[in-house]
Image (cartoon, rainbow, N blue to C red):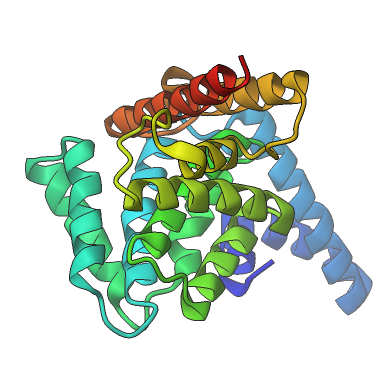
Length: 274
């Protein structure tokens, strides 16, 4: 647990800590520590049962929104200078989300905060981590967006890799899960940079290879494995499911575009096998 997370936990359950320590005071220093520990866990249990630890959909969406643009800014500044391509990508995401007025201003402010040298990732990711406990699909969507930020200039640097590694650690995303997403995102990015617009058919062997990459399967996989991978990705990126689990409403279009690309990749592969 990082320092920010530890401090936040202590503050959240301070009532139980203090009461427990006072009760255990008669047992000396060891009694105080034992009492504080018991008080902490009792406080945590009571809050959980009472629903104080539950995150509403609206809170989860706010945490996702703020973290998205803050981390995008952090990654864009990873190499020391934010490029025009990275700014254009951030603006493109805002446009795809159809942000305007207050929401667009908020997104720009978050992006600017992320670019600051002293910006603490834990500060913005801890609320998101708590909002997305046991919610792998929305975590994956978040990682995909951040990977696109790192890949948009065609150069995935070590500095960007370190930040993404920290993001995964703070959100509880394993190295294996990250690498699986990264392989799919690289295939998708390669296709778009080659001029692809979501249609893999007619792009030759390169387009077909990228289609397999988008689905995260090998070209020699059997039909059953191919269909399983396709169905799993479609379920993970289903817009309505993602929004219900904490994805901001404004990002539904991004999720929809993802499913369209997954569908196009699957259709191209199926056609090539007939």
